[in-house]
Image (cartoon, rainbow, N blue to C red):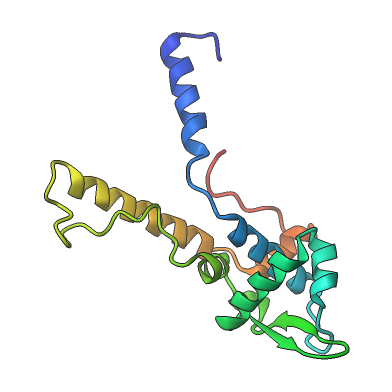
Length: 170
């Protein structure tokens, strides 16, 4: 890869491999894209139809309908039926975080479903407690990081008013 030495090449390959490991699901991404679109066109008096939202975001309409129902169920969007109906944000864009959006459609944000240290025999095997604590810490960092971004932040960034805030190097 780098041509410098085998150890450096191996380290670069590992770094590339590990940066692709923790992911937001497709549902989490689609939910975030849908709510960002609603926030970009926020007007509580003019709901956005699922069809229009699907066109603006490039998301498949049937899947988007399912996601919007889940978001409605946790109070992130409201719907209006009938002619001129559609969806609007249920709260201000400043009060909705990406952590809430992802958790609404994916459940708790965790690095894995490995259990908690010192519960249900989780520490019965060598080294297991240490790793469980690390996985729990990784999940906590993911939640905190996603919670640091609001839809309002994303609107400013999408409009070019505020540069994309990066907290880690790629």
